[in-house]
Amino acid sequence: MQQMSKQQVAKKPVEGKQSYLRLTEIFYSIQGESTYAGLPCIFIRTTGCDLRCTWCDTEYAFYGGRKWRFDEILEHIRQWPCTLVELTGGEPLLQKALPEFATLLLDRGYTVLIETGGHRDISVLDRRVVKIMDIKCPGSGEAEKNHWPNLRYLEAKDQVKFVVRDRADFDWAVEVIRKHDLQHGPQLLFSPVWGELEYEKLAEWLLQSGLRARLQTQLHKIIWGPDRKGV
Image 1 (cartoon, rainbow, N blue to C red):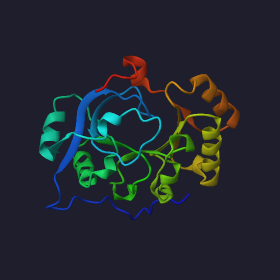
Image 2: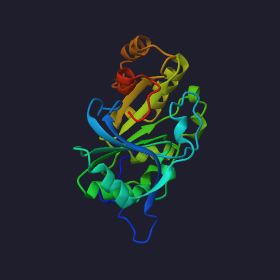
Image 3: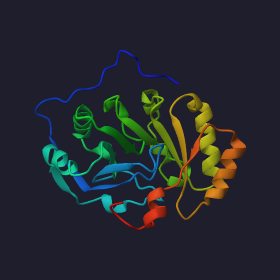
Image 4: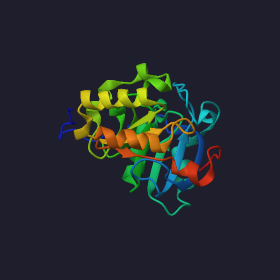
């Protein structure tokens, strides 16, 4: 798998660009997924998504929201004793100003994660952003939207997530990992579709596969239940 050139530098904000994001919510909670699971984290959830995954659990973020100026967001998140921030959605990369805002956060000492569906160009992001990128399995109904060139921009700190609905999804994911040599690149995450696939079954498949991959739960749903917003 190709890695980004050592000579590439972080993209800097350009003066005069749109300086606001349309957001559904901002909240402070426990990170429920990724290798950062269990840590306190500030979540900035953007509005809007151009995918319609069959198992989506954040449809309330598809529409509405309101515009937040960059300075408003920065002021709002200062209330919490935390420097870990996740940009999520919806699909965050639909927001044209998001790469600039991510760099703004990084330059202020925040560790920035982004959860993205894997169908939008991630090369627009500052290299320091930790990219948690979905590769959509067939069970999502959106597998044809995967933007495969994104794989060349992933580094060891980044993470690829497969949300698995059934054995067919799992076998498809294993083939993708082998085809693109992802075992030697970003960290690999497997999640079962909530309420449709048992953790025990997915764990069994992972153990049999020999993959260097992490089985992840959705910790926030275990703590607060699957329907609670703002957690």
